[in-house]
Length: 453
Image (cartoon, one colour):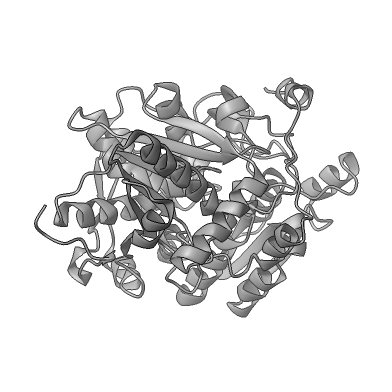
């Protein structure tokens, strides 16, 4: 190609997507519906609206509309930090000595420090539009809680966050950013809710999990008038909002006539991965193009690679709807690894269906290998990455090394979901040689999976 590729491909403000892309519209096999935990029948819009905002319920259930318009108020907010750059990792390519061309979509250039703000502002907007007092939520590593607290401050909404206890203790600075934006932050499981007290009684001294925190947040939302629960990953509506990541990445590639061969993203509940791959997966589903899509999950919480594709509760307290997904069991409490945003026992129903149908693959990465890749990337590319997105970095480096061995000039895209400057306790543990690689045994997983509904 004659046109020189810059280090960073920037789009113009006018190139911010005007619509979100809904992958489900192009899926032949739709994700299985959410089920009522009592009747085991598909959840109706009326039932879901008791937990979620009404407009978000419509988005959650919409399987036919390929493009959903982004309200102007949300697009105006996006202008503060979007479009986000697509970066050519020239320094990394040179250091590796690979013929591969490596790109990453950087989502850490906003105050919340991650991609989570893309959906947080949308969910806060719809809550405000509905006339609610506030919202409740859970957060793992804290990126989602930080983003939601920022969005709620913007729309003057109350924000109650239940933060997984191990992350609450490991990431005090993330917690304080949430409080700076006006959110209340409670370590989960806590004594403040009925379900929290029950979990503590059954698991004394537990470090918590996203499933525990979800249960507490839902309980508070449903017991307080004028509040609704919002979720930062897993749900169809969240993947929809996050599609701005992939839409911008594809527009940047199209600007220079580039087509990625493989797309790599970290996978916890599915928000980053689903958003990054959205338009590329759409082309794949429609038979217009083919891409190799790789989900990378922690070896300590391997829902895709070692889980079961079945209906399960999204929360440990078993009060939320059942979702058909790759799951390790709602009672599974992962080891307290430092990639807190990936410590969810299940996976997005949309991504689970796509994985089950063979449209994407999944691999695991051990924690120490991930931090080794993170530090290597930081020294070469100058960005300290979040532990979550460092899973994608690890596999991108592995794939680039394979290209060096074979001589193939593959084009690799991975998602850099955010920065790791609030994760320095984790980096300290790694640098001090105090980080371990706990991987659950088959017996542990079988025990958790034996309790599937």
